[in-house]
Length: 207
Image: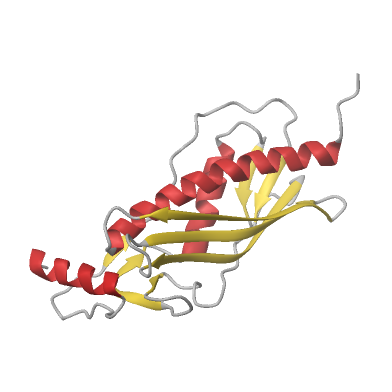
């Protein structure tokens, strides 16, 4: 694809007036949603285990097509740019990988698996979209979390997380980089919230 073609697509998308149209010579570009790894830490003996269920996406976001919004309330998809897998699967993998390296958990596994996990993390209402009605465009990443004590079935924490990250370029690649930064920001918050939720549920340690 020529530089002129790329410039045309970026400008049109930023103006909110065009979904790029693929020609027979246009190859589809696939992207990962990747978070930076935390400093690796070793879990304390007896640290609880966590199972992360497969996230549920909001309607319109349960596909690996890359969503963008030319104006509030309108959803479109880039024609020749896609996620390597549906974002809800990429998010699950990122959560498992990141939380597993923080040292707060004895084990973090995706569902199915870890039937004897002490806690279960459910994710729903996932949104991942590049919004072109601001200048520069921005990426919105958000989802709802619920943390369960598996033994009792009790919800010990519930919270929605959302990040808005400006792009460095009004094109799909700029959106991918912004999505990665948004995910980095949210994962730090999620890790701290999970630790605090477990501490509140367990109560103070005996003297």
